[in-house]
Picture 1 (spheres, rainbow, N blue to C red):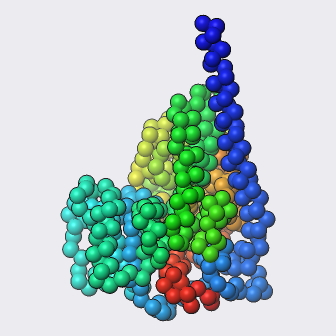
Picture 2 (picture 1 turned 180 degrees about the vertical axis):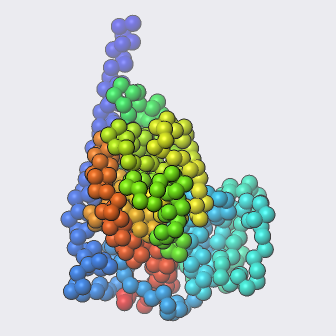
Picture 3 (picture 1 turned 90 degrees about the vertical axis):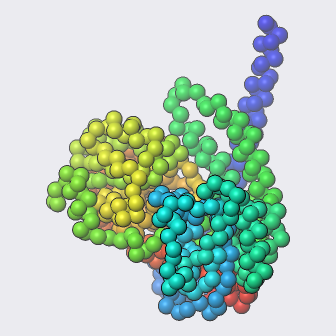
Length: 494
């Protein structure tokens, strides 16, 4: 027995040392990125931000050298594109159901906008949902206004087979070569992508950000609560090797599109992608679908039982009700808030495991379930403040942009991606460390400000979002990048 006990201690010590070694290894570059981003963000943003000093000269030069989000530049929506492009898009799924994911919504919004700009867009995707709504015949007059969908066979609906999609692409490419090929993340694997010089990839999340997500989710464990059995196995067996693999194979993609400023820095500084091959373009949402509407606000609040002149503060959250979206900390923080405040309500749009937990908080919480786009409009208009307590610093949540376009201030986890690309001004809302204590504290501050002050913040959010986070601005930025890939003369701005 004594010998067996002695054998266990060195293994335990080795595991601890290994964990500390890799933690330090990946914390150092992360801290470096945070330091450099804070030191340089003010200068780059000030030069091109829509809200910057008007005395600043407008930015000009080679767009391939721009290290800020292209959304900050001015592009003309009224002028037709200088050249019509034939574009190939690889997307694992195309949104046909009622609740598509963020990547699917991004692809649909972007390529519908580009098709309506006159570009010939061909989407290569998995088999579509066989419902009658999905398979309805598109009128001939609309076919030029929407992407052409090529869904491969030999699979269940939504089951992606890149080799089948690649075969469809090759057939279409023989008819007339594509000007630019675009893949949503790794829909097109790197061993195929390296043979396509006119290819661009949009990263909606990278493995280095996944490592940070694992850390944040583990940090909310209660004292004495055991760590997940699969945590260490996942960290050493999946996450760390994936980061190293990504750093190596990402170089096979000709052009990289980061959807947040911080992701762009990681690609340049940690993944070591040459600067001229990394381009930051923030996602956008339909500006016609999300806007302020007083009638929708009144209707929504009346359904909550609130009078027109009620001073109640309504907080809202939207998305899947799962742990990594931050619902454990939102649940506890709001439970503490209602102990001392009687005029607050929480409305949650979405479904998932945490739905029943929220019901434990009683009448102060309303669970709406999954909402369609029209219902979401009422939700955003009816709340006073949008809360996003995510534990995943990956990509940029579209709900933050939708809320801001609807004229609402936001309360979000303090991640570099959100701080540098969304809540770039303290006036736009509140940020907090992703834990219960920090979230409770900023909730107290927001409630103390009152509805009138929150509405003032919301107006500032709407102004900024209308210049930065619209589908039109996103589409024009992508259009200019694709023109630049096709012809170098379009790389020079303005």
